[in-house]
Length: 410
Image (cartoon, rainbow, N blue to C red; front, side):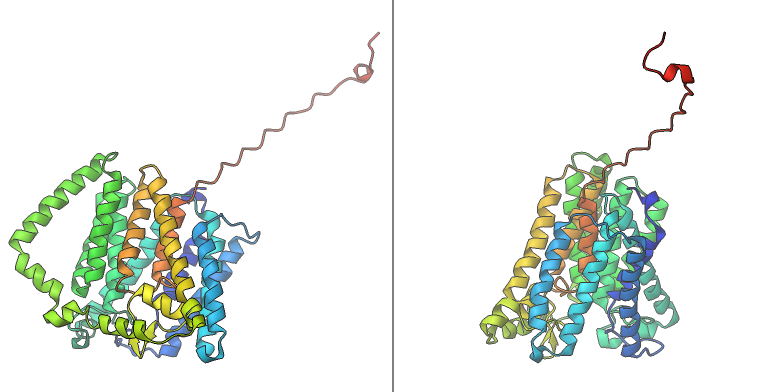
């Protein structure tokens, strides 16, 4: 089932899923947006995505997917722990949101065929998001580079934090580069996406996104190294440019990487380690240890956890941690078993990026951009749907005379 046969409504539903995962917390915008309004828009987008996906897949045809099966299993500890009255109504609401999110992915899985269709949807939608960030920077540079965030780029039109912007920029840069190496786009089209995204990534000063981009591209291009001359040339030129930049701009790169932080603040990962230690030292009942405390806002003691594994451990327990680990192991194992191809390289990039970012970013256990990245990887690793045989042409029936219809001819 190729991209030309994919209904446009599928791309629209994917865009609505992207809108749902943008979140409602972030920097102050030029025009103040009430958080209730933002939440209404994001939740409305999820409901519209599900309705749209259901409209184009009324027969409920889905593709077998170990990734979606594991996400469905993740709903079990989420629901059990969120049903505890102490978790509050918000936990059940987030659980329902996750269920609707996974259900929409199941409906869209009908069009997962191992091709780059959803890669293109992914790039288009996040490029539009970055376009709003760039527009906010032009409209109000002071609001887009506030002192509250240390002069790092934020969303001035829609509340987006620097790590979010860095994540979106890094992902579409990596995917666009791989499409260029695979001959699925031209240099001009790739430059229109990569160059402004690189500028926005640099303005966010996001170390996790930068390291994830570099490591993901190294692994993805490495998977094409023996079969693609373009990948070998790109790798050689990249190594040469990186060596020149390290020699000529070493001090500037070091200053960008440190972001003016002290050695103590840097080694504690901007205070994250203190929250992690407190979370691990907290007393837990057997139920909380196995199933967690219910879906929340990924915080502990009023501070963000900023680690996917600890956030899942806190909210969905060891059961959730095992299921999330199984997701990455299964996707990574399937990618390694596939023969070298562009789809495999894009999947390796997305899986490795999410694995690296999980150390300092939360989101693998709840509806988030990271689950969308992994869904794109799952679509790339899906086996192509068998071709439907064309119907045989109707053969005109020959008229048989009445005398020839008897069993004997005298």
